[in-house]
Image (cartoon, rainbow, N blue to C red; front, side, top):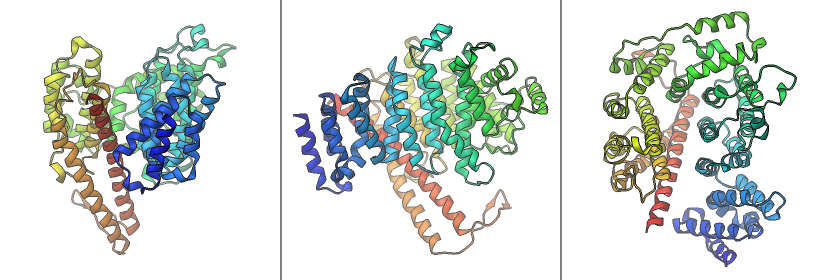
Length: 548
């Protein structure tokens, strides 16, 4: 009986310390819990979760129940008591589970849904997702951005309702989800607004970047193609217009007015050195500018909030010509990575993407190989790897265009991606952009490519990937964390002031507290890499077991 199996694994784990849990324990807990839920024993599972004796077990293993929980909740009717039990289980898991692991579990569940269940799943998991993110406290910017991006990627699979009847019925839930996502983002907007003037915390700037990415992406889809009504007495009933107003409101709240958002000069408050932000701006700025112009100058949304001088500058931005179109590829990369002028770095990235988009699949493939071999910059390499992922996704969706980004050709390209440049000795902090992009690509391939079809060749290359990438990464993480932890202990015991020289110019001295902040930030980066690495390995292990 399912409940007996669950109780057996619980009793087995109760006598163990958390560090003594084995992979077999996790699998048995997941299988037994899933069987209980699917067979209608939600009340019994809830009792196990609420038992104080099982707190450590639930913290480590509970996130594995997200998938079966969501399936059961969506299958039960609103008034079903079993649905209420499942919702209470979900709430308990949010409170008890490791936030990082539970976050990955929630995002994976959102990412794997399709069709009519996309909006249902998003609406169900937004509140738990928000709660988990808020538990991350100050180190949550990347996770907030990843969550918003995952949600919008899934919503982009839903058609935008066009007629008034379609908007009113909202059969696939796009309109409801759009406005729910705005509510989801509000605590993070409030945090940025609260800390914008006084705070010097880098995470606030990063959180602002992630919210800006969210707005840009929302303007491209669904707002760019939404049929917004002209002003009339029923205008407040249009949910997409309401969503547009909320997005514009976020831009205003975080002080990213139209001219500073899109002019190459940028805002005096901006400090965008993050390659991820440049990546998003490259993809969406032209369409987003068009949509924002339409919302302000045609729909008159928020126009009263902009000073006349800003509106004039906005008009001038429309006629700004593309810069640096004569640069060759290598010179362009140098501008992207070395130029001290922010607006030229941003422009060069836009131009690089335009350059990439000009090629067919074979040309893109050759260009990516060239950039991976010659750029010698982790940010550029991470950007290229994201482009590779996009091309693989297109190829898997279109069978007639799969030669260069599936099969043997892709295997050869992945040989340049899924490795550490200097093995376990690689500087993981300096290469973190590349490593995270590589892990996310590998995670995508494991999830999307069926091991029986093996369209990407990933499953026949698994041993080589483990040898060249996963094992050295494990070793490198252990070495790096040990080194930085030792440095933290040393800093605690020393009151010395550290001096730094950059490009031959002496920078202001670093106090002990500043040194500790840098070291802790590095450890957080390693923890993030380690979490994604663990998830990738778990996905691989699960799929291998299904084969055997």
